Length: 598
Image (cartoon, rainbow, N blue to C red; front, side):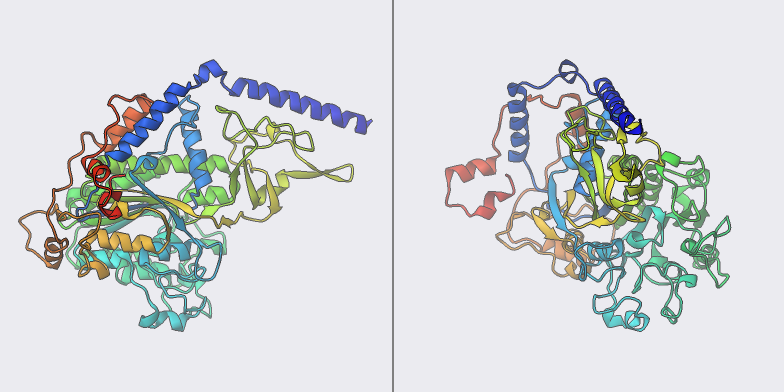
């Protein structure tokens, strides 16, 4: 009897899936399928934009890096579709804000020891300019994991973009939805052979003689000089509100409250400092009268966006306050903004949690774009690594990106989820044993917008792993065109330093005479300040003459709005830039002469 019932149950499941697909997939007329003319116009518009590209060769007064932790290419694609569907549109034809930046590249994420890296090694590459070993922070690959003595050797320690910026007089800060001592933010200031040494209680025997990461943030350079520190992680700082419940909470054993020490030190140094723990306290902080700001809004990581509490500020809110403070610097600033819980959503096989985090991350970027001038601010959006998320199954346009594909050609006759993982905790919800056989469960019978939902996976693991493929990088602002092909991850730090004329590039800030930027770089710093070595390098940077970077006809955000309103509209005829025209007329000109305009 049971054997007869099984096909019936599966048939009912298939019919229910088809009904749901009928309701969720927009008919062709509602999707307004484009004719060939509209696609042709869209292609012409993209080409027109590329032909009229102007390079920004200014010195970057400011540098902002947005790191979507774990935000691989498939996650960006899924986020783009999810974003559109939340607005009642098909989604596939839209963009995340950063995808319309003028420059993009692929970044190779492997670390010194692993094909598939962790966030400590990748962040060290991003911000220190050197690849290192798995789980290491701010130390060279010669330092073995847990080798405290070797990590204390100055010859093995790496300096970061934050130190370079501070040495040049720039203000610095970090904003994250994870602990401020977690791998990505810690790479800015810590030197540790183990990313998990976030509190003294985690050091153990192997860590004796080393400072924990939280201690380094408060007492060592460059951490103690950072003007803005916003995120989670009160436990490692000895300032937890609740009692720790597990070893992973990383509670302090020395009885120190590092937030109090931080406040005391800043006060003794004569600064106006503020420590806040709620969204309201952050809102009430007067940026004009605040020199240093530390905000820790959770004992551990901040809650997922889909679990957001009223007393916890959003990533856009924290980003806005950080910029309110950092923008006061006449010399400029460096800021890291991390969407750290994108990674956590993927680790638990929850696309819903991860994509909501990605949209929050995008909103933080949009807030920043409203507050800075891209003519003087280099903005980079990238990921530190990818995950094993895939998009598959031939779903139709308009199909719920969190749902099933409608492809019933699987050998078991069941639908498949559009978003699946290679491994992770979702295995238990993928397969079950019936009548002594392992069978796949029907994903259409579950709610993918339930935070407890886990996507189907192939290999069981307590947590899903990272992915090893290249990740995307998008950039706008001074020297953003230096991101132009597939790069090693450590290259990113070198571009940031060169664009801002800091670090090793303070005295190596010139363009070769044949370079694309064959015009003097304009520095947009106040004329009242005393000239320094960076000013001299900017004056001497380029041999030759040329025009300053032109002012755009419309802001980047306005261009985004226009694209959303009329995606295929082509108002102007296809026009070739003057430099490209000269290249067409004189093919003998060197390639570098015209490359930047194409």
